[in-house]
Amino acid sequence: MQFEGLNVFLRDGRTLLARGPVAIVYDEDGFALDQTIAHAIEIGFRQVIVVSPFAPVLADEPNVHLIAHEFRVEGFQISLNAVIAAAPPKTWLFSCFNGEFLWYPFLESRSVGELCAFHGEERRAAFFAMVVDAYGGGRPAEVDRDDTWFDGAGYYALARHDPVHPLTMLDRQIDLYGGLRWRLEELVPWTRRRIDRIPLFQAQPGLEMQVDHTLNDAEMNTVSCPWHHNLTVALVSFRAAKALKSNATTRDRVGDLRCDSSVRFEWTSEQLLRLGMIDPGQWF
Image (cartoon, rainbow, N blue to C red; front, side):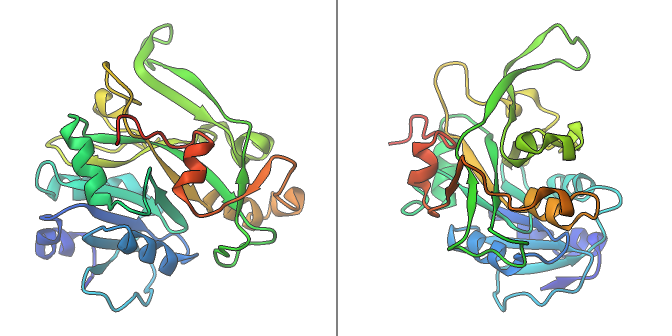
């Protein structure tokens, strides 16, 4: 189904948000869009909504939909907040960009619906995610599953400080750094170096996504609840590599993105669990 504009979707397509989890994919340039959609369907999203300023030819699937909308000027969060407001409360929503893939513990045997149900039973309404900067051996044209790499070391976390009271640390909130944005930090604006996001969450009245990929509800930005560890997820993302290889000011300076700490992505959740990039929490 195709909607000619965000307002048309909010008027005629909001029933698609009635049954979650729903994936919302923001198409910046068409890179690996089909693979992004296919992965979302494979792991169990009931609806996949693509927001794109282009006119991509999407897979002929009854649960894949297109919103023709230019989001790049105002920012993705403006249209996402409109979708959050239109969704029934407690609907699980996932937002990502093309060329990004959601990974979570035991993905191979458990659907994203089971993941969200388990998290909800633990009274958690959002997932903390680590962005894993993935890259290939050359300039990315499409995702090559046999030539996908990421940094296996060089990650760290800092306690997040209250922006209003800088000497106060926020409870159970952290800023993550690492990957390409840390290794090539001289080429990345400091506002783009963090690799933490809240991409999967329950819609609530008044909830809004902010420009830094956090929500306006402090508890939903936390890594875990006060009493034990919770599930965390990862976004395997080619976005940073694509930008570094495509931007005229950086493409001649980066060369081969692989380094001594690079490891080949096995496309398994077990590898990410082993490296501590996702956490099963109390999952059993």
